[in-house]
Structures are given as C-alpha cells and as structure tokens.
Image (cartoon, rainbow, N blue to C red; front, side):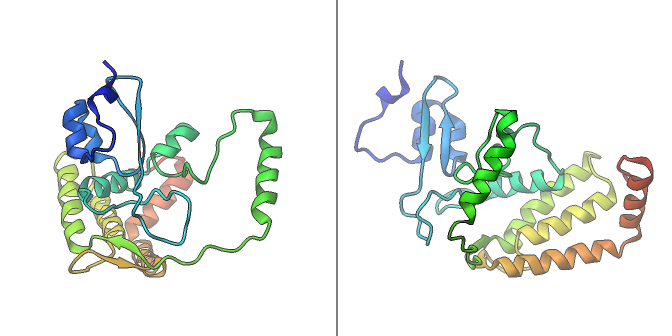
Length: 224
C-alpha cells in the first residue's frame, strides 16, 4: 500500500504523528531535507517555510523550533570527537561536510578539473563575501551536561583514554557555546574565540605534544 494513501491533502501533521501513521520512528529526528521511507520506495521532503533570514535558498541548519535538540547535538559531537571521515562524497552530505544546496558531486573524473574551473569562475562573478552570522544557536550548560554524560559513558566503556576525555570536553565546551546559563544565540566570532582558547590550552599539554611527535615518527596515532 502506498503510504501517501494514509495522508489527507490539506491536513497538518506533526512529525510524531507522521512517525506513527507511516510506521517510521526516525521521522521525528528529521529537521529539513529528504527522508526516504524505509517501508516503501517513497520519499518525504521537509522544509521549514517559516524560517526567517537573508538567504532566499533553503538552508539546512542545526536546530529548529519544536525539535528535540539533544540527539542533533550528540550526533554532531560524535562526528567531531571521533574525527569521522567520509568514505564518499555522498556520505559527506550525510555528515554535513558538504551542503546539498551549495556543493555538487561530479562522477566524470576526466572532466573534474574543467568543471571545478567553471564553478570557480561562476562564483567569482559579482562575488561578495557572506556576512558574519550573529544568530548561531548554542545550548550552553544544558547541552554540556548531555555531552558530558555521553563522554562519561564512553570512558566507562573504555572507548576513551583519560586524555581523550579531556579533549572531548573541550570540544563539548566549544560547540555548546561555553559556560552559558541557558540556550542563546551567539556570533561566529565568539565561537572562534573560545575554539582558539581551547586549542591553545591543549597545545600547552605535554600529552598533546607526545601525540604529535608519535604521529610524525610512526605515522599512526598514539592513545595516551
């Protein structure tokens, strides 16, 4: 049975309602974009029509009003903390290293350089650098508590060393916007500043220098 036969045109459905109606539990985790129904060959396209901003194109951002934010936060944290590498260009879309409304993939290898050149020339016409964002939503202490709990579980499971925990907490501090008492919007520059602070503090740790030296000498990472 086509799942769309269960839907009524003009009716409003919540993501939770769609999850139950279509027997697709993961729909509740979708923010924007294409969701392929696992029980059929059909797809759903989610877009926030009330999203405000200067850009006229679709913008796949991190958090949206009404969504549960913790799973999204943990997912991004896991990608960063485990240094996940995409095995293909299309997996890079899933990891949000590439943006579907900005980047494109060419499977014609002999034409890659020519296509890249055309793209650069196209971007150079009337180019204006993007404005610095001042509206990046971070979760502050609430998000940090969620990530610290996840880090603790990794440590108890012996997936992390003590120094891995220290690095992971620095990452959690940055992506949650620092020691903020509640969720709020911050600027790009603010995040860059606290990222730089965390990076330099780790460079002053002897265990960081040991890892760098070991990697350069042995071409494999050190778990210290």
